[in-house]
Image 1 (cartoon, one colour):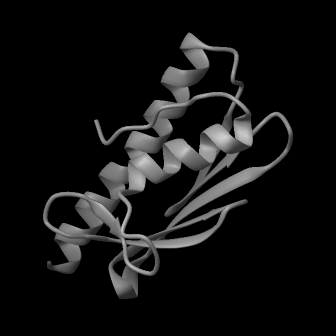
Image 2: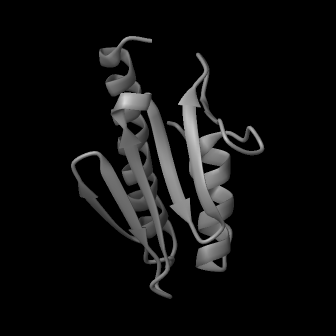
Amino acid sequence: MTDLEYLDRAEALLKAVEADCDRINESTDADIDNQRVGGMVTLIFPNQSQIVVNLQKPLQEVWMAAKAGGFHYRYDGQCWRDTKGHGGEFFADLSRYASEQAGRPLAFASS
């Protein structure tokens, strides 16, 4: 994948995370604060726990830090897959970790 392709796909991922936070906040009382600074989105939950999603441009990866740990994802041609652990898909993992931190079921998706 070229650097430009990586940036396009990674930017789409960050925008999807932001849009999902807005959708979740509009349809529930989850009250997730999301803050974006450059290539990083921070989700802050009512209990003050956080999930940080940031771009790692030199590695063409997206990293996620949650209470469950730190995870590295690389685009495999179809989706963003964990490269260091269980091979999970980014949005499925984000849904699981955000649900754990929010104490309620939350769903994130690529579109």
